[in-house]
Amino acid sequence: MEGKQLKRLMVGMALTATLVTAVTPGFGSIGENQEKAYAATVTYKVTASKLNVRSGAGTTYGIIGSVVKGQTLSVMSKSGSWYKINYGGRTGYVSSDYVQASGTATPPAESTTYTVTASTLNVRSGAGTNYAAIGSVTKGQTLSVMSKSGSWYKINYGGRTGYVSSDYVQSSGTTTPPAESTTYIVTASTLNVRSGAGTSYASIGSVTKGQKLSVVSKSGDWYKINYNGRTGYVSSDYVQVSATASPKLVVDSFKTLGNAQQVILVTADNYDTKSAKIQTFEKVDGNWKQVLTANGVLGQKGFSLSKKEGDMESPTGKYTIGTAFGRYENPGTKLPYRKITSNDVWVDDSKSSLYNTWQQKPANGRWASAENMDIPAYDYGFVINYNESRTPGKGSAIFFHVGTNYTAGCTATSKEQVVSILRWLNPEKKPVIIQSPVSELDKY
Image (cartoon, rainbow, N blue to C red; front, side, top):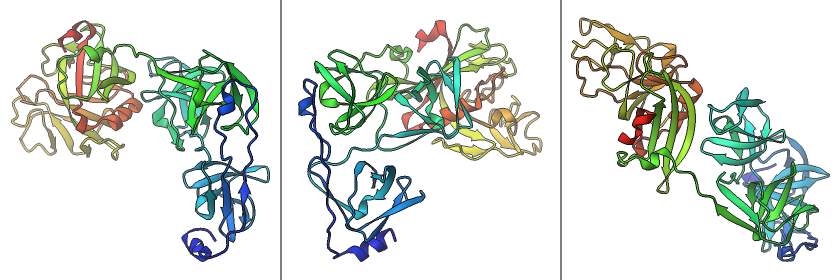
């Protein structure tokens, strides 16, 4: 039995099993003699008459055995409400509800696991889809994450540095990768690198004063590091952490953003190109951070400073974000979302009183022409609030949607990136989209 019912049955039972986890003192390195020993005074008391040992931290995982009241446990770490234990040479998990721990220390939090959720996910040379693919990972594969940069994870990919989109990686655990802009420098003359997060673990090498570390995550008072291709741990007491100055972002110089805290920036080399660069930025703690970079396309004839209906050009300017839409269920956006039906159209008839609005067929004389919304390009997207006054002939149906060739006046990118941006957008952060040739960004 396992759960609250079992726990009630155990009330009042004598607690007899005690485990004292012994720790070997630190040795060898200057400064490390004072490292904090994990669980040096902790005792663990099993309170259940019989407790399942599972293959993972949850009751959904398979049972690999059991422990009984009075049996001692070798606790390695804690993951949520579960203890990771050494079970006859195997790794197992038991519910912490039925193990009583006493003492001044607790086991370190188990490091976060990062698992690929996409069938195939490109590994790129930089944090953006505009960087070249250097390989790929597959569904279910576990990644060695080094840091996070916007919506991208920096990983160790076969000894090389690579980047994967965090949208297609599931993380589980209590730790997070450090920000990529952080530098970790050793302050001790010599500091042991150990095989686990504690001085009881064997030394697998050492680092020296002034050496920069490749930190993967933090577990209690220990940093998990990439040590010559191996996983190692060093005491955080002897590592200096400093954030390196981030390069100035293009949005830092913008003067017209008002209270906007999210910006989508769409730029092109000139007015006549249909190729665009799409970047997203978010203000965090008063500072702008870049989130995403992607390739995109504009109208077939590029940008227009003064758009007209049917000119095949995308309007320049700064606009607010309207309704999100798609032919499928809401992909997870916080924007108001409308699912497209076969009767949905967008009126492009300049003479109609419904010009530049979303309507439903039949027309019944209300318009002479309208754009069908139930098309693959609109699998997902959002309305760019252009020509909200609905001035006849100034242009209609300006969207951000799916596409990789060119548009009739909208802005488009891959479905993967459209969904990523939709999930990121938050109406509470007053998002805006700016579209401009690079040479005219000083207008904003």
